Image (cartoon, rainbow, N blue to C red; front, side, top):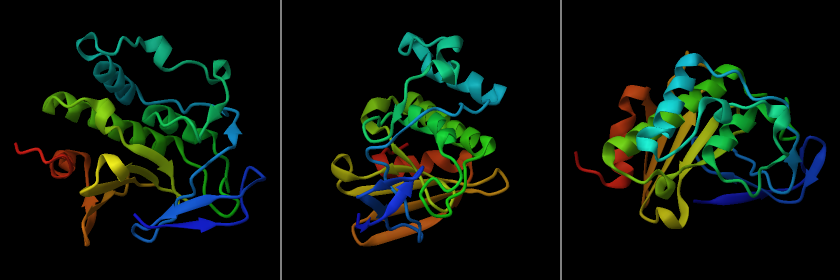
Amino acid sequence: MNTSTWDNTYIKNTQQPDTASIRSIGRQIPIIYSVTFKKAGIPQISPAAKAALVKYLSFSGVYAINDASLFIDSRKQEEFDWRKNKNAYQRIIHLSDLDDKWDGYNAPQFSKQQVDLSLTLYSNLRSYCIDRNIDFAKIEPFVAPCSDGMILFEWSGKRFPNKQLELYVPISAEHLFEFLKTEGDSEVEGEFNSDELYPILDWLFNFEY
């Protein structure tokens, strides 16, 4: 996927010599490199999303995570390293750390509702892997904030040389999720709701149901 380098980009008033953006539906996504952020607070996750996450992460005892350890007080956390930490769940909950204009320009702060939507999508991905008997660790997406206010879930690079997929979490529940499928020189984009997620993922993972 084509990338371009930005100069003089600031995150929390700290200059970043290298930032990147991806080409997809006209969006630019600064990749956060060396700056770490003190947690400003994890959003209060809705009871339904919280219960779903605990259910899927603890499925068949594979992920021995209890309720208290999954949603712990942010003040007990260490500083989050956006460059090194690629864990999708951790990156989602730390989106609330980013202040308004976190990219040094006009990027908005992520709302509690939008972070909850991202957690719901993450939970649905876990559910998909269980239903399709797929190891989530092998297909975990890269999660990144977008300057236009949306949140990216991306599958690309060496793990997915033939097909790439980008999913975008909207700013609010009043809007649909968006996708961009790329295969060779062909690109297909559109909107979807959570009930339509499985066919999109089946396309990426070549799963015939």
